[in-house]
Image (tube, rainbow, N blue to C red; front, top):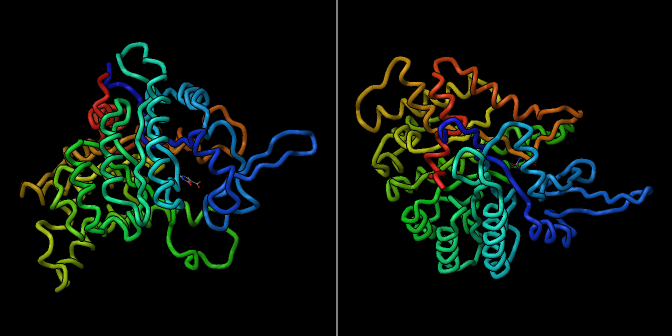
Length: 382
Ligand code: 5CU
């Protein structure tokens, strides 16, 4: 039964405590509240730089658990592994981030543990990724205490992190004790973007949020993960389980170029234990790519990395199947709501259709990407 579940591993929440914090602020990130002439509360979310037209409408779908469950029911999603949405605690001073991380982890545990049990499987409908207070000047002790807290909360199966680390990115050696603790606890690390790349790259035309979200977000993940690989994190922590948002951004497309640049660079050539493509095969990617060709390509790249792990070349139809085992369905809810009222969200339907249409994936592979891989990765057995 469990292998046929539809599991959404990329789905966000602003827990009520976090939404209250955003309401109490007047600069990004914040929620701006006003009352319209007919007396209705109008709330707008401003989390990115240059939010167009005074922010985006937000409502209970961002914080209310019943709304999450209704969204899941509408789209046939059995289980969601929910994470706090960006920008997490990045903008807070260390002491506040430390306290709030602990509180939000408890809140998320409650959010999940009070959720219904699936009718035909002894598992809950909601699990979660906890938060670490990854901000400058935080103590290592605070980070380690929070990893320990998350590992003891039964419905939290991983943690979500941005790309900043404690201010110097994910290739900062100061994070080594944290990777050690996460690896030992067996928690999945979901790497998610928020900052994009330098806004100057987007030019002067008003393209709304298209460029920062379509390109900036995935490029940020690509750069952060590449830096992490280059710094040898995956050599020092070979059992670390990293899940990349948006199918790893441009990393699958660029991994052979990366390998070649490393081979030709006197500073880096001897630093890593393996060819760069080896590390691709250690990653997990969400299947939030919206197209079957992109999913197929990413799965090929991941499978091909087996060649660099075992020396054996993987060929034929088995390649795609192998790669599919590291890809997991996601929706990005509550972001990307439909602009016009529709029964189902296009962003969800497209991602599901893409999984169905990847050439060379068998039904078993599709079932894995839809949920079986998540059941295994997050140990969703009860
Ligand atoms: O639309 C957006 O701004 C976002 C966001 O901020 N975070 C995310 O995960 N998806 C879309």
